[in-house]
Length: 150
Length: 80
Image (tube, rainbow over all chains, first blue to last red):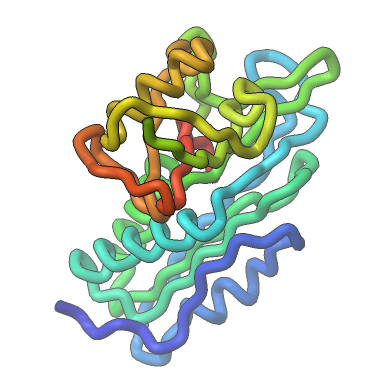
């Protein structure tokens, strides 16, 4: 429906995410808005201190699922550019776990598209995190008795 | 019997005790594989959800499997 952007990026990486690079990749001279979401590691969960998080991905499928989400978003909003980068491996509190950026002609659609991409990523993309506390560890959302963490 | 090689991620890796397992299923559908897996690893039943991916896409329980397919267990995802 809308033109597909020429320059874009889907990345699953064990290296620190370069947020500036994500923003630049998503930017377009035709755009009046660039919207970026940056997800970071919280230092607490369920009232306990988080020492670190372990992120794991089924990489080939994760890239494919992110591609599907972007395709859906491209049909709903006039995306001029976009980039998604997700970190895997061991992350300490404060580190960037995910960055999503989109550019569109006007601001409203940039907020909506970025929110849709991020929300759907959390729902569908095969990436898992394990919280490691001082006294144990837990795969997030795995079991019903564990509070859903957003 | 049909022999399927299955990859595991996240909490399913802990339940299976490794990154991969081989299971014998009586039939060729995803549902048949699911039964064989839960029989071999009963703790899989306690998960909030468990999807099965075939060749890098989510598969329905009615989907037909081939022994050469890349099959993976997808427990509740928690990216972001």
